[in-house]
Amino acid sequence: MILYSLRCEQAHQFDVWFRDSSAYDQQVSEGVVVCPQCGSQKVEKAIMAPRLSKGGSEEPVTEAPEAEGQQVPAEKTGEPATPAPEGAQELQQKPPSEAEVRQALRSLRQYVEANSDYVGSSFAEEARRIHNEEAPERNIYGETTPEEAEELEEEGVPFARVPWVSREDA
Image (cartoon, rainbow, N blue to C red):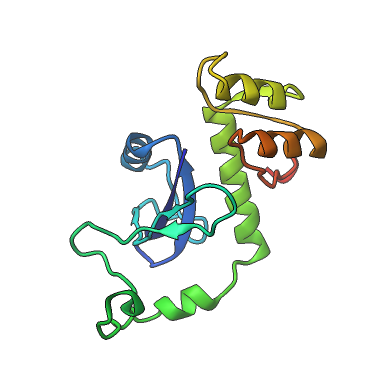
């Protein structure tokens, strides 16, 4: 799974999870990806730096963008800062509304359900089997107890806790 920061033609920024980069390309070309604020289907990737972890309890490391045209913060290059586009600072400082958060969570739930296998309360067991290569690698979702989640973390099994909106809200 990959998280892209996207921007619509109205300069609204939002994040969307995709199975991989080709899934992003396909969904954007089909008009499936829409801005949660204005509904625009004209979206593109926003400039972002991937956050990588070296493992353990170290702080995440941010890699510098390598593609031509991407910007690096001035404090990293020693060069003067490039001014942000008009209105960009306002977008970055304005927290999302409750409706925007609910829409993002609805989109996330729909994406996960469409691109993952539901394993119910067997999530911890199945995640462990996939991690140990005892089951085919695939995206799964389900439920765990707090104790099971802690055990998965201690064992180094990768997973993410996702705030799940109820079906009534979805």
